Structure formats: C-alpha cells, structure tokens
Length: 99
Image (cartoon, rainbow, N blue to C red; front, side):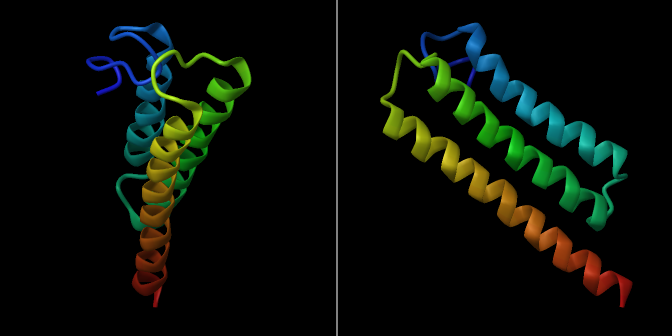
C-alpha cells in the first residue's frame, strides 16, 4: 500500500519506504526468533516501536503531503496498536508454553 498508493505523498515517494523498513524489522525479527512465541513477542514489539518512530519522524519533519496530520496519526496508531496487541498475545503464548 505504501509504495502503490503513497501514504505520505505521491505514489512512489521515497518517504514511504520507511513503512517497508517497518515490515522488514518484523520479518527479520520473526526469522531470527525462529517463529517462537517469546521471540515473536520481541519482534512485534520492535515493529510497533518502528511504526511509532515513522509517525514521529514524519510529524517532526513535516514530510507528509497527502493526508492531514490527524489522519496520519490515526493510521499509524492503528498499526502500532495491532503490532503491540500481537506482541502481547505472543507474550502470553510464550508464558503458557513455558508452564
């Protein structure tokens, strides 16, 4: 979606590559964790932090040209909540698995 539609500006804008970086953090973290629940919790938490950092960078540098700051915060906040919620669920799965 980031490269095809352009979340921050025009489609193909290089600033949208930050979102690809966020997904890369999650994918690399999942592989390093070998898809085990405890490692997946850490990888998804790191992904949530990365997503939040994108929002902070965009708002502090005023990169966005497309949607308003409020819309961009809602969109990023939704993904931060989804990644953090998934990390929380994996954390509980890791605890249940260790018992």
